[in-house]
Length: 190
Image 1 (cartoon, rainbow, N blue to C red):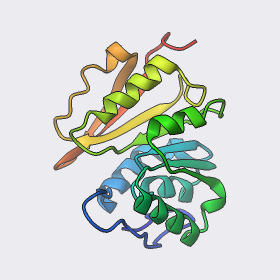
Image 2 (image 1 turned 180 degrees about the vertical axis):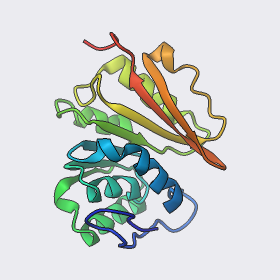
Image 3 (image 1 turned 45 degrees about the vertical axis):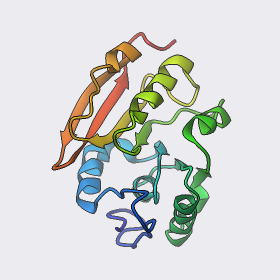
Image 4 (image 1 turned 30 degrees about the vertical axis):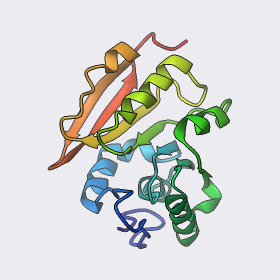
């Protein structure tokens, strides 16, 4: 795994040994950032279930002004720290080593993130849990302009999104997984 473009281009990234994390392949990461290319520069990027941090680091390398990484796994969080230091992007990043909902509580009052990316373990409905949180709590760190992206296994059901106040604006499928792009429905936030 490596950084594909930007200031840290071609630098290799460490990954967490074992099967606890599932790094996004370079090909899929490149496709994702080709889709996001007009939205990354100077954005605030939130990387939930960060694993080794490859997605948030790619965003920083491509010009995001800030990235926040949320990762509960101790070994993965250490990997993110090492990757941020190695790529010299640590000054632009925060790492919250805790579960996502504890992190969200700690983030109260922060400025909005333009992009929220999540890559939770497959098959546990954590995407829905996160979207339900945003729907019910309306935290300050997201707003009507925030783009939510969920990486999920093919066939993961997002039909509930509109009930939670979200609209699926795009789906990009790959061989075994997909990226689902969501926005808050008009009129759902004050």
